[in-house]
Each structure stands twice: as C-alpha cells, then as structure tokens.
Picture 1 (spheres, rainbow, N blue to C red):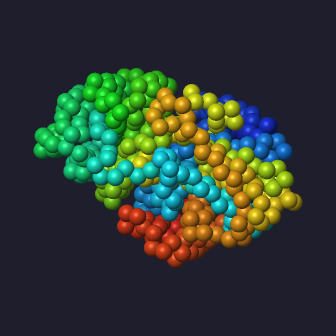
Picture 2 (cartoon, rainbow, N blue to C red):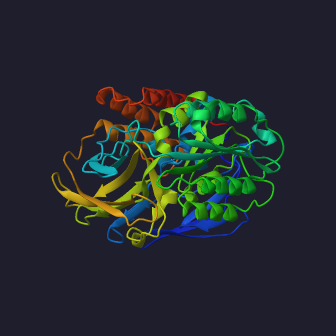
Picture 3 (tube, one colour):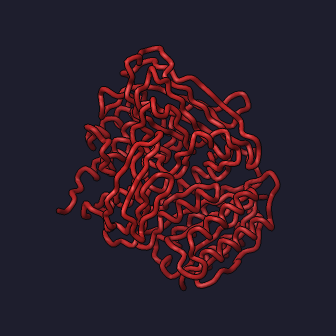
Length: 502
C-alpha cells in the first residue's frame, strides 16, 4: 500500500488562538472546516472506503488555556478496521487511525463504581516513553455492571442493509450469524423487530418476544442481498418501529448493519444526522456496525452513531462478531449518558498539554456545565481511557496536585447531570502501572500508524515492549479471556514488517 492516500493536498496554515487551532486554507469541494479541524474526505488507494482526515490535537500552553474539555468516545471501529488491514498485509490510511478508539477497544483494569454511582473515575501520572522530559496523564472511567436478571427490558430493531454489495460472506452472512448468536443470550421478554433496506425499505418482522427465538431466526435466515441502498428511508422506518414498541425505562435501540453508503433516496449526511438526533432525543439509541471493505463510508457511520447517542463498531471476523454481539453485549445497555470530561491544569505544575486522540470529541469549556450539550454514552461494564502528554513546569514535583479532573453524566437522557471530581496528584512521576503501559503502548502504535509529528521516539518496538510489560504486570487480567493484548502484539509486529511502496 502506498504511503500517501488519495486525497487532494491543500495548503494549510494553523495558528494557536485561545487554545484552539485556527486554520486558513484554499477551499476545495472535498474540504470543510469543522470544530477547528481540517476535514478531508479520503478514498485511500482507491479502495472505495471513505474516511475523514483530521489534525492531531496540538500542545496547548496553560497560560493560554488551562482547561481541557471533551466527550467520551466508546467506539471500537477504528481498531477492528486496522486489524483487518494489517492482517491483509497493509497499514491503514492515517485518516482511519483514531487513537481513542484503539484505547477504548480494550477493557482496562479499573475499579468498579461505588456508593450507588453509575461510573467511577481514576487517574495517574507517569513516564512518557517517547519524550522522556514529558509526562503522561491517564484518565480512566468505568461504567457499572448489570448483573444477570437485572438488565432492563430491551426493545431492539435490527436495521439491515441487504443491498447487492452485502452478498459476500464477510457481510450479510456474517451479520446474520451475529444476530442469531445474540438472540440466544437475551431475556425471553426482550423484543426484536427487523427492518431491511435495499432499493426500498421493508419491515420483515414485527416486534416479537425473544421467547419466539425460532421465528426470529427464521426471518433472519431468509434474508438475501440484492438491489441498491435506500438507507435513509430504512432508518426512518426502523426508528418508527422502535418508537411504536417503546419500553419506558427500558433499552430501546436500533442496531444498523451495513457495508457502506446510502445511495438511493435522501443521501444528505445532514438529513441523516438530523433524523438520528431527533430520535435520540426521544430516548432511542443507535448502534452502527460496519462490514467489509470497498464501499465503507466510515465517515458517515461514525457521525451518525454519534448523533444517535450510540457506538460504531466494525466487524472484521467471526471473533469480533462474537465479541460485539455476545461477550460484550452489555455495552448495548447505556448506564451513563452525555458523559463529559474536564481537566483543569495547575499552571505552576504543567506548562503545556496535549490530548492524544479524541480530536472529533473536543468540546468548549462552556459546554461542560451545559446539560443541553450532547456527549457520548458509556455501556454497562465498559471502560473508557484518555491520555494527555504534558510538559512539566518548573514547579512540577512529586506529591503535588497537578490538575483537577471533573466528569458529568446523566442517569437518563434529559436528566440533570451528576458531577464527579477528583484531584490528580503525582505519586511516582517516573513510574508506570500496567494500565499506563498498555495505554502508552497503544498510543505509540497509533502514532506510528498516523505518522504524526508528535510521535517523538515512538517505534513499533517501543509499542511492543510497553504492551508486553503491561501483560507481565497485570496479574493475568483478561476479563473475557479474549487474549486481545496478545493479539495486539502480533498486529504490532505485522505492521512493523509491512513496508510502504515508494
């Protein structure tokens, strides 16, 4: 795979203004300016897959702005897409590398919430492997567990793309197997509807209790891929079906399975986003699952899942299908809504800072206390991780508080937010826990794939060593016995062996 992706390079000049990036550019049809970031629609190497490129978060001087605010991101699609590319002998295009999704693909060893809270927060400061004079700040969040028999009743609508491009075995057939497997683990009183779309939309199964599993599986098994892709009308029908069977206090969710874009009917991304936002406001969540390559509109699917208060996953294999639909199915139940983070750095302790990843989740300082501002959700048992690279100020010292960490979340959409807060102190400025090693190793790997200017002395070998050290020091932590960290080591080594063409 060639080193450069197939998008038009446009001169860009970026200036630091009040802690944000201000960019001036020559405009082209496939460029837009969004949230301070240059957005480039790319079709890397002519694969047909579409991504939005973005600028890496810069270092921000605390004298200019010492408050950093961002929404959580619980997606895992970018990691699974990377795995597919690397296993096929290619490195993913840099626009496909979202480091926050690499981090949050993994379950970290974080303490459970206590005192009746829905989430727990933790933090640590330690060494920065790729810039020894800098430090890393890791933030951790964990959603409460939902134990067997305590799940809220679920009202699922499977919205399935059965257009012709879904016919290959890694698309519709894989999706069908995932849905069948998921049904075996649901409560008998949960309900399933199925809406399909191709050249038109169709409700192929009315809302049916899971106790009639054979009826549901029979309807799934009959699906055949053909036609074009009228996704917008299908989405509207699915949302209406979910609303018609709405369970008060339950888990009402549309699960969209598709390989790509909507190319028939209303195809405007803004119209699709508006549709998702309107139903999210009514308490209906959206999970988007992407399949295959060649027609994948990653850009659209990520944005729609964000607008729909949901998550975006990419299914590259039967193992990933099992992980998403069976092993981690608890994540389909949101336990914390509109989750926002804010870190206030002590100017005497921290000279500057950089949030690694979360580029499209950065919020304004004023958004933190605004309960009308939308943010991401956290599923049951889910962990969320964020990393800051910080440049210490002269006053930086052990046992000192360097920052305050605040988080706000809602128990249900529309509620008033609940605040959590903690001081972040330096216990061992040169230390590194198993959690920090894993996060640093993932970040170093992501920066190598993005070829970012901030990678410092990062290397694939460094990423491998950090993840290996995390495994050695984590006392066998592997909550689902998936060996994801060991698999990451294999991917790092494979990516290191892949050479770009000249």
